[in-house]
Length: 159
Image (cartoon, rainbow, N blue to C red; front, side, top):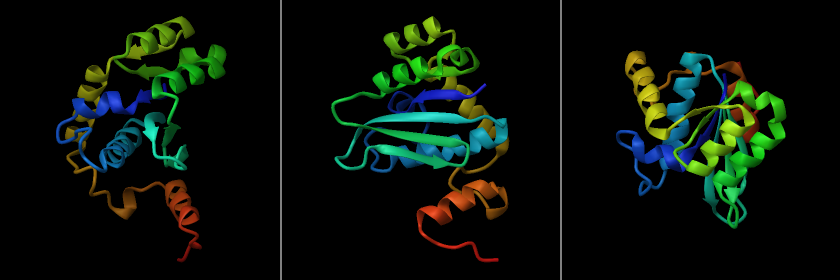
């Protein structure tokens, strides 16, 4: 069951992360990559307040990050994503502590976890992996993610 995650809702609930950290979103994405790889799940994480000109979507292996433009919130983007999923929403888990997002998820038939509940699950998975999420070796990075990074930086794959 894949996840739709309110990123800024989750960040303050994780040890060592804070919304005051400059690269808080990158650090969360790294942790989610380890989690998704270990759990064999996919996740879409939504961040609001994207800088002007930087609102977009980026893939990081099993994690898709949505950077929502100013004037719209991650909550709105998650609710819109649930509407687009239609009946398939019942196959997803929404991670948010926002009442409106949780209500929309339940209405769509999606499973709901609070940010605190998911933070415990994420941290447990990271602890069991016994790894620093920032210290992934090349052997642990899925080939499709390597291809994504090479494409992002305009590099051709070299053997």
